[in-house]
Amino acid sequence: MKIKDNIVCKVTGVQPYGVFVSCDEYTGLIHISEISDQFVPKIEDILCVGDDVEVTILELDEEGKRLKLSYKQAHPVHPRIKKLVKIRIGFHSLSKALPHWIEKTKNRGN
Image (cartoon, rainbow, N blue to C red; front, top):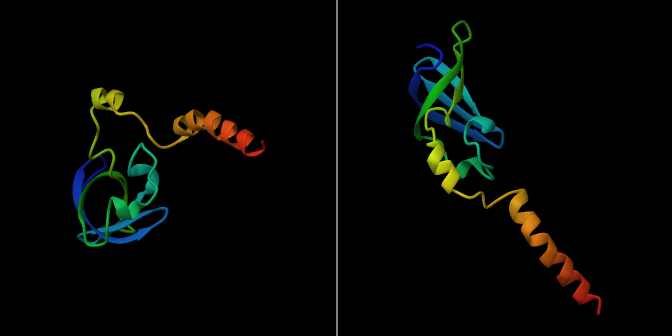
């Protein structure tokens, strides 16, 4: 096992900030920032306790038997697909809706 290797781990716990996994005698964490480049509202919608998950090793602590892992590096999205997929959640959708909300609020006052 070494850095940049892809390995399969078992999900042992899910928290709002990331996912805990085990692999042989190692324990690891997939931080929420390493799950996806897109907004992740609930990690449980992607990974659940008991799932087998393929991840990439970012850091390896042999002495403590701990791993820092990345789900998104093990499952890259092709750049052409990224260009075709529009982000539906985030600032862009809010900025589009803002003028409508302002107009709606103005009309309530009349």
